[in-house]
Length: 218
Image (cartoon, rainbow, N blue to C red; front, side, top):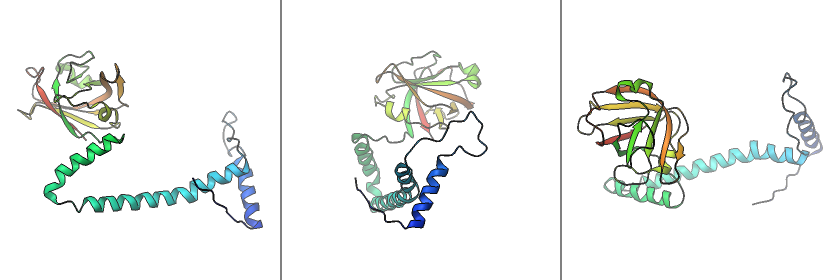
């Protein structure tokens, strides 16, 4: 952490003092019940302004430059080696505490509507006849291949489009979007509950209970 010295002129000192005083006034037009401005010293105010309007833009530009350099380095990997490199990179990200976005996996379909889902299964809170009323989806922490997907499922953003599809017949599918932040249930080896809204449904799920389904996230 660095310590920096800034030299100011008398007019600049007066401007800083004026800006600080204005920051301590209630906002013009704010209702009487609104919270007063946060109490801070003039030095704290100045530090906040410098961090917000001078340092933050520098950090943004520096981050963009580092990201550009990283992408340029990745682009030097021969096309034939990129799938293997992608796997290696994702493993490194996970090892160091990061989370790789979930794009596709496989889960067994569960016709049950009450959590918890069966091991390595996914289910929704509505029967097929009522898929349009579904409001939640439940994923076991392990996918159909026995891979722990808890961290990736918990990282799904609101508005993620999820499609559950029969790999043997693409006409059998259920599609919905997430409407809430994923919630971990029953601990690290439990399941993930996500609020959802119906989008589309096709074909029939009547014979698909326990069937391994393709799940995509976009």
